[in-house]
Length: 263
Image (cartoon, rainbow, N blue to C red; front, top):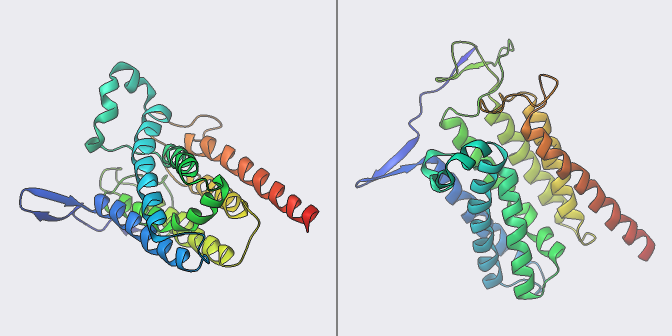
């Protein structure tokens, strides 16, 4: 059994301003997307410019923040939102949803595609490999904050979290760090390093994130206000991941079929 390491969620202070690890994780995610995007633009044979990458990351950053917060309140705390719509703006209290953030990014990509006249899926293929490092940083921040802990377990690496009682639990944020962050980045970066059919990388992102999140939810304690949706194991995170997996397979199958027909 492991004991949760005592880590201050505040990384440092700038005068009266407290800088949290969670904020640093977001900053790292956006900066890594800029850096990797610039690298991909350099290798795009003129299809992308640095200015376009900067604009795209800015659009997507807004999509992540707005979509993530709205998605959390709608998917996980809808009754609170109905009782007090102003709760939507209390972001300092925490509460962000990846699936809401994904919808926000999809909206941002659509707006960017209209502005630049680029194909929606060409933008999705470009940005998909840039996302997992930000997800990895976010999951590390979840772990540092001692939140989103896992279900009670008897495995030797079970960990006692500070606000989750005396029983050891799965360190689910670290599981998600490895699957949704490190492994997903490796898959997408290697896959997209060679020319692929339009939409294939986007489809692969949806498939593997959905699968990894579905698996991780088997070890993660569900949100207390929702609990299990069915079968004493099925969670909201899994419900929201299923459409991602189905849509991802549909996109990937379609683009591969078109590539075969046209090849």
